[in-house]
Image 1 (tube, rainbow, N blue to C red):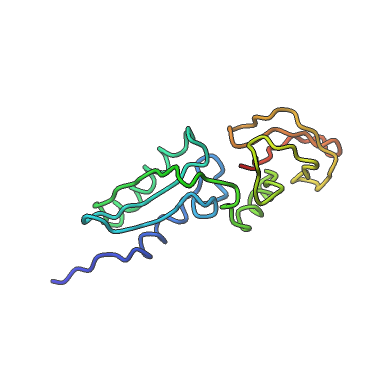
Image 2: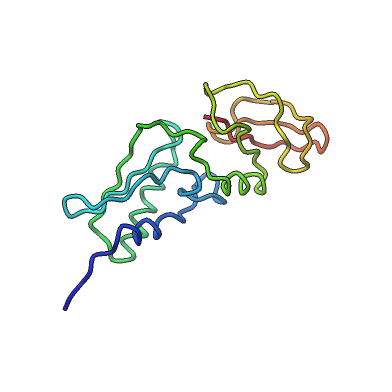
Length: 163
């Protein structure tokens, strides 16, 4: 009986569609936190990068990676967190930005930022596309989002902060 080890591409594809626990409409691949899959010392090493150093979702994502791989018979798995390079909203795919908007979260305005709380001239409401919005709180439902209110449709919404 000949058994073949799964390819790195197969492993990557198995786990790439894991949804982000805090924003379930985007995947860990869309978010850009799924960094690499390697085979080292007879183990599949999956490398992920948190969006924030203390991101509470990382434990759940690690568990989901292991669960999917274990359920597919792949038990020689190690998940590593890497903090370098630091995650940035530049790693968000265009598809992720569209999914965020459709879900009611304003995507980051710029492809990159120079600081965490950069001043943003205009935040467009993801619900009605109005530019008449105002910051309510620099912290929204999670640390990576800020809370805004639309002056036209009167709805509140999160902005995925540029990071």
